[in-house]
Image 1 (cartoon, rainbow, N blue to C red):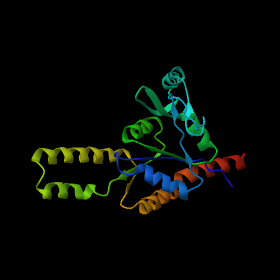
Image 2: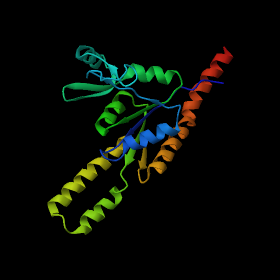
Image 3: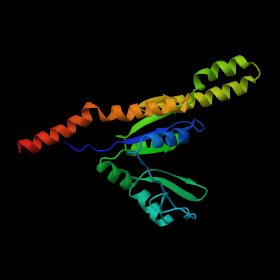
Image 4: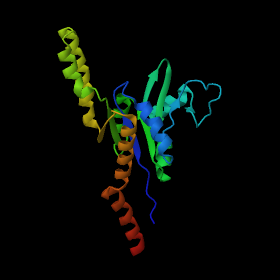
Length: 206
């Protein structure tokens, strides 16, 4: 039987939507998923292990990797760099393991540029559909505040265009079940399987 290559799954969405909660629950249930280990220039804390909690690098090493396009995304928080190493992701996928990355929207858009073959899942807040009605019908907010809130919501919704799937996080269990269904369906896609079979057929014919 052919060995299928792993798939990179990216879970993202606006802050406060519950990405971390969904990821934790998903990893309790889907044991064969590999979490994408980030790289950082911050110092190792007691109890942390290199290659488990993070890949720890010096600023020089990290900046050199940026120049070589060896990071799928990176950002700088409070004088320290954080990023997703391309090599680790690609090596894990080659082993046939799926890699799961949970990340802010800006980071996800960077990954999309550097690794477009990833599968992008947008976690959507359940209250967004109701948000407009609620804000408008409440009648207590000033017109300006209502507009600002709606603008923020619209910005978040427009970012959804960059994603393959949208999951509403109404209940964590439901959201996790949907993410698992996405993972399964991605592995059943004709083009993923066809590529593998064609290669086998070519080898057989030779």
